[in-house]
Amino acid sequence: MTSAAEDVELKNKSKEGISVEDVTIHVKAPTTHRTEDREAENKVVEDLLDPNSKLDFSVVPYLDDLQIARIIKELEPKDLPLIFKKFHAISNERSVKLRTNLSFRNISYKKGEDIYLSGVSGFVKRNTMTCVIGAPDSGITTLMKTIAGRASMDATVTGEVFLDGQPVDEGYSQHLGYIPKDDIHYPTLTVRETLRMSARMRVGEFDDIYNKLKVEIVMKFFGLDGNIASTIVGDDQIRGISGGQKRRVSVAAEIVAGHAIILADLLTNGLDSKTSYDLVKQMQTVAHIKSEINASMISLVQPAPELFELFDYLLLMSKGRSIFFGPVKYGGTYPVIDFLNSLGFHRPPGKSVPDFLAEISYNPVRFHVTRMSKQMLTALNLPASPGGM
Image (spheres, rainbow, N blue to C red):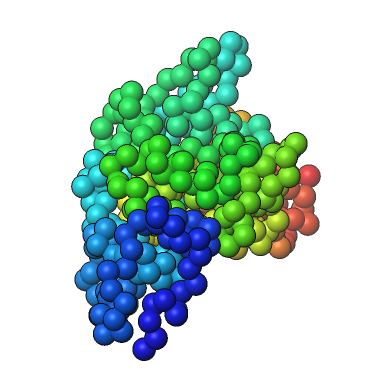
């Protein structure tokens, strides 16, 4: 077995610590250079990365620079569920305080004479993802802001929000991570600096070593490591990372901050279909890690079919009202389609479920049986309606 010094490329060694890919991780120098001692210490790293080992990250403060460097070097994105499980042991004390089941009931939002929301209800359950679909004028952005506690000061908001069945108090925003439709970051900070700041400002209970290590792990999982980690975020005036990478930074910032519930408004707007799918798939992976306390609610206008299938629950909205809330799939069928069919709204042949839902949100009347042409009724095997065209 080769020594860790040969396995891991280390740069910029100084009195303050040792750097891997330009980031100083730790300040403890190796205690030995004997081959047999290094092999024993490498075994600790192997156990940390072994899914069958009970060793967790509580041993991190006892590791030296070379061991920390090797952990980061050998991690793969597919290892995230395992690593989060290992982190869970050291974060458990804080996690107990977090409430992870969010529900909202009869949310209404009025500003002047304009009504933006009227009686909207739903929930976000631990280890699940809820999709909110609606046309641009359906009120989905207003709903996300209201639930996150960011409603306009001059608006009249009624309804109830609960966390684990308890009415929320003034400090409930600590449980929620909110991602607005426009990414907001300091443009001159690098990706790594942005995520470290998020972890340091909002996860004060952890020692700095845990924050740094978790940032490196999350960056690797979201494909933000390597050169991207050292690139400034940028904005309209300063050249930085791409729009898709900024969205990943926004999501990663909320994960390293340790929020139990992430609310992401219009998460995939401006992204191509592959980038959108990859990002939501990564969020699904995090949400479905049973050892983690995490759930997500994401608003979308018109998701692709394969992206829609990633979600567990659906809230369909139109004109500020909720049309349907329930599971995306049940017993191999789509409950929302069965519900709409029972009301006389039918999906045309060849139209995907999410496309149909997006159009129902924008103009539901055109899909009602009384407004369909005879040709469409025949294609759907429906009897001709007296009100049909």
